[in-house]
Image 1 (cartoon, rainbow, N blue to C red):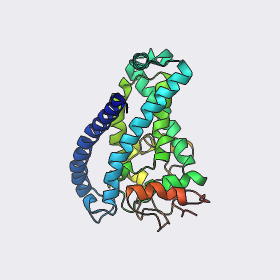
Image 2: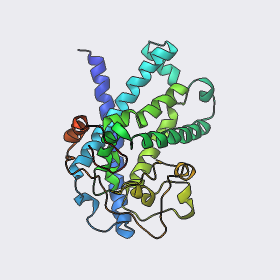
Image 3: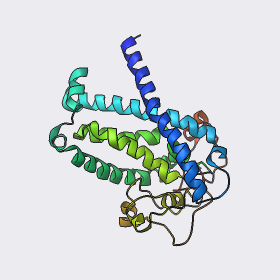
Length: 286
């Protein structure tokens, strides 16, 4: 057994949880207060939602899986593309970014990363609402009580070809890992915020930034394929998928598949047993 690799893997696991747990605790306090003042949908508080245990399990699984996958695929890509095989050489190569992008100031790298990856994720998200990919993304839509804590519900296939893929592409393109120190927590906060039970639309900024009402329309049971953006609602406005009817609030979330189980492991296995789904959105798995 390679004890050095085992020790590194254990350290990465602890480090990931060290970053996740404080955000969870802070979000719990913040969104308890905010959803009490300005809820989008009335009813039970988040800690009494259906599938709470499943949500908590995903908050451990998804960050750890994504972190390991991003590291391993980046190292493999570095070996194949750049011919670097020594661990220290690889670490030095990525220390402050590389190539033309790596020579830019960090604020510029951050702006490129934010816009480029958000654009890519918009189209990836649309693909996951079509054909055989939907059965993996349906895991995220299965929650009938959409709350801030629902944000981590993603099948590993969805994670691998979504956030992990765009992060690896950004690192290989030259973006400095230092950018992730700031934008990593920002992405987590943004995802938690847009899933929160809030009636916020951000007023005139609703056409620019994703907000809770905007994203909750995406989670309604009978979806027409709207509001795919992760951070910049501008993409939906530009490509004709923007949907925020004036004076109306979304409700009735989930998917038309009563057989979708609860629990982390059952949900990870369930898509593997399903045939290709015929349509998009919140339709049933067939």
